[in-house]
Amino acid sequence: MCGIVGYTGSKPAKDALINGLSMLEYRGYDSAGIAVLDGLGGMDVFRAVGLVDELKQLVAGENLTGVTGIGHTRWATHGKPSRINAHPHRDCSGKIAVVHNGIIENFNELRSELIARGHHFASETDTEVIPHLLEEAYQGDLKQAMLAILPRLQGAYGLACVHVDHPDEIVAVRKESPLVVGCSADCAMVASDTPAILDVTRDVVYPEDDTVVVLHSDGTAQFFDATGAEVHPKTVHLEWDQNAAKKDGYDDYMDKEIHEQPRVVSDTLKGRLKDGRVVIDGLELDEEDIAALDRVVIVACGTSYHAGLVAKYLIEAWARIPCDVEIASEFRYRDPIVSPSTLVIAITQSGETADTLAAVQLARTYGASVFAVTNRLGSRVTRECDGVIYARAGLEISVAATKSFLAQITALTLLAEYLAQVRHRFNRSQVRMFYHSMLELPQQIQQILDHPEPVRRAADLIGDATSALFIGRGIGYVVCMEGALKLKEISYVHAEAFAAGEIKHGPIALVTEQTPVVAVAVHSPTREKTVSNILELKARGARVIGIATEGDEEVERICDATIFIPRIRSTLSAITASVPLQMLARLVAIDRGCNVDKPRNLAKSVTVE
Ligand code: M6R
Image 1: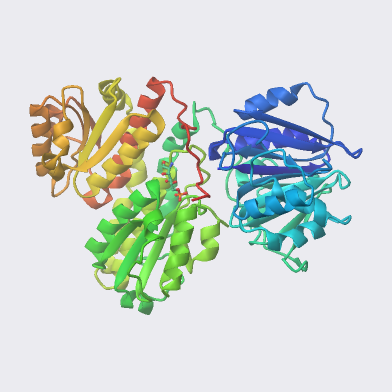
Image 2 (image 1 turned 90 degrees about the vertical axis):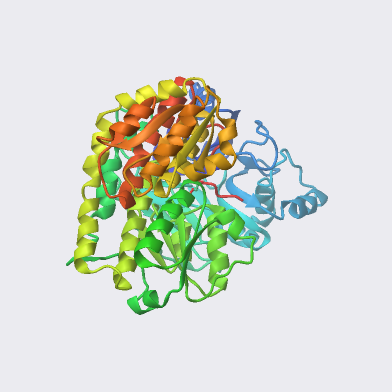
């Protein structure tokens, strides 16, 4: 979704803005723009449809020496992608410029009012009401003008604005949209997400809703609550290394992130076993409460929803607590059965997904304990839940979730073990046994990554097919759902996952000699059943790619291509079996000339409904 960035400091703002916008490209966008104050009472605004590179070319020859500016990548909601609709937007005087991420829900009403009072609108966007409101409220102090208009804005916003009369200052504010602020010795920056400011600092502040931030070019920032009183939010140090937002020699971020998975799984496990017991800091529920739970409900979207489905298998099998997994956008509009003895778990990599956050808010109205599994420190979900388990995947830039998925399942596996231990379903030696099996996972993932040849053969089998089927049972079925999502989102091949036992009830009618089928048939109590399903598909001419456990000659014999994964307990197999499917989706996408990191129409953080 949209990204905003602001820079005020001692160097020309242009470079920091363009660089910051490039780091926000992963969020998904269709146009980009910047506004730079010239320090002499003027402002230069550049906007371009398409990539940040187009904008970069547009400003390349310009002598922009101003040290304060704001920038934006726009993902169209109100008005088509065009130069006119691209941000920054200005007021009638041209002195104020605004960039905005989110939606102003009452923009129609505000726009009519403003037009009636003589304002001229240049775009179709909801955002443009903001500079005009600021223009009316401004009496020499931009922060005060911002505070004055906030009660008029309904909806979600992360926004930043500048005024030509304040060439050393940016004013920013957020409500339900992400915003991060970072300062260094010679500049202050604000952005929708941390990658945009990582070059400047790793000590950041995530302001609360309705906090107005004033950034100064001397590298300081002040924070004010909605009444105008100064507040002092805490600074968070990000552990990410300097290469977190760089490709680091890989062709694309997805490849880098897939290869980081051994370390990610090991980081997620680190320090979470003490004296034969799983410890999960941040859960904020005491053991008595956990023992009293009668139900778990998981809410999430996309890949995070799939992580939730893996968790369901484990929570029910180990802790024996009934667990339902719901797509957040469905849950939020239902009348769900949730009570104070329900534990609601919101899974979200970004911590900013609008539907998941709405589901959290709904669950809280029923008095349920709600906690989050997220990858992003300071994200909104961390503020809205009772407890948080961090997935520790580090910064994920590619739109396709890979390492965050493995980190989520690893964290959720630990949580399932924890629930089993608290409810006396697992004793210390069982907990130790599972944890020690999990410690083998990083090395097993590495082994898969070190042998990409079978994945190459599998990608060739998919070739130019327009559709692919995925089949599996139990956790293997969830692995298939995630594998199919990866394939469709980055290669645009239509892909569907089916529970292998269901194919005879309809989907097998789709199978022809042109149909590639990915079958997850790893060692598990239902492996033999899946093998029978593979034979049924082979009998109808399907090209079958098997995902099997090392040494499984039978699967190798009946499939057209086989990718082996090392032997592991079947309950942990999603963590390894998902890896070749990520690699497969990426290779198919590259073969088709797709941009794997920025699939069409998609955004990394879906911050609007
Ligand atoms: O940040 P979240 O985990 O809440 O995001 C949920 C989905 O939007 C996300 O998983 C999406 O499906 C990914 N593009 C999948 O690769």
